[in-house]
Image 1 (tube, rainbow, N blue to C red):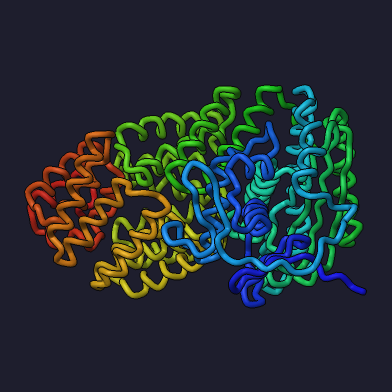
Image 2 (cartoon, rainbow, N blue to C red):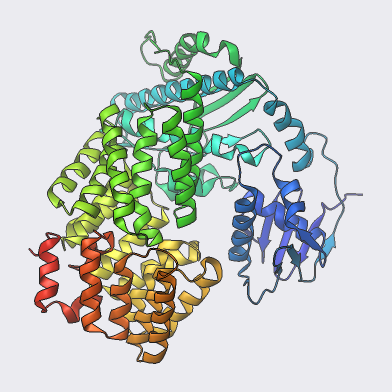
Length: 637
């Protein structure tokens, strides 16, 4: 008699541990492995408290990279979003402060556990696979990295060559090949190594994007990572991303060996090229030339191209460089989360990376971007971070003048701090020229154009960014911001709501509050803020937004209460004066608004970038003091 696999049912949801799937009314939901494991444990121990320490022990092996506290918080936040649950009024997961979590819904257990000799439980996989790695001397880890970096270069070059030949030899109907590098699977069995496989994926995207941009467009990281562990078919992924080809594979580090698989396929799953490497880490450098020739030969044999002899360039790295690169990947892990706390963590890793290897140009560029953005995310004064951003950007360009990310970083500094719009535009254009597939370059350049009121150009650049990164939440959000600046409020709200459906906790999506206020949807704006405070707390910008919306709604007393809370917070830590500009718009204090505006100008606040186009300032534009500030930031034309 067949045995039904064990599963848990609660409310409209059904969780299947064996296949790591979660369904709602029969529809499969997207859930990352860590969040799934948390939900599985809570369902298994329904009604019982699962402490944070127990979750740490189950999900993250000792000695791994992942910050377990950060990881558990993210996992529970993800679960609340997927289950449409609330931290304050939970229907499924109850938080017990300083203790842990408890499943409070009724859970029905169906079927029985079916043994799987080939796939031991996650926690056992972690113990058997990650512990030996922790005992390795540094030289083995170094050699592993040398092999991984070399393989990234070789596979990227080989794949770009295939696509070039496809374009020129087989003439794609569209005249241009569009490729997606799907997330390389982490086969280590340790979630703490996700930064490693994610970093490998990003490395491939970067190299392929710059390899042959005239003929090959490469989908950016943000969109492909949407399909990490998704289980979606290649045809569905390719159709959603509008690509013709996909590169997929896996990475596994195991003791002193490294295994990488990679294959190039089309939407139907037809394989054009496949290769698997398993080598002793100590032999990787000497085998690079051989591997390059094998890749080249296999590709040309498969496609019927002429025989050529590959010439691979060996990549030598010191222990310090290997460690620096590892730290850089960890920094990128947090950079891609785009919230104040994550940016602070990213800065810490990037600073350690450049300390280990002062020649790591990409780490300097990433550090510059973090410092340039943290003002807008955290509300800290620009004078504290922008000089550091400039120094890091210039150092990156001194090391590698052809690095697009470094030019984009310098453009941010010129725009956000120097208000040098000519220099900023030149740097953005240079970044895009160096890599036309650089989605972030197009994205930031679109913002640059919008701040000057060049909305048609801005929307065109934003669309190019969207084509390169079609599932990016930040690109979609900033597209909505451009529409808001252009006074297309309904279109902007529609864009923001689409982002909210994908991730209700995405930080920049809070821009919807301004658009809702402009069309007098005050209750909606206040509800948006209430939900976000449950997750992120009341920040300086949050309090200013409260004052703005409450004031616009005619609730003056409540707006003034928010202003008092903001002033109290400012006595505890430094706050960007532009925060008070917004709050004073809300409470209607015109004179104090200009005092704050002058202070923000002297602090070189990046929040002033929207001064020319932001509708909230429309009542003050005729005031000579407002026009004086516009002239000061060179936006008076």
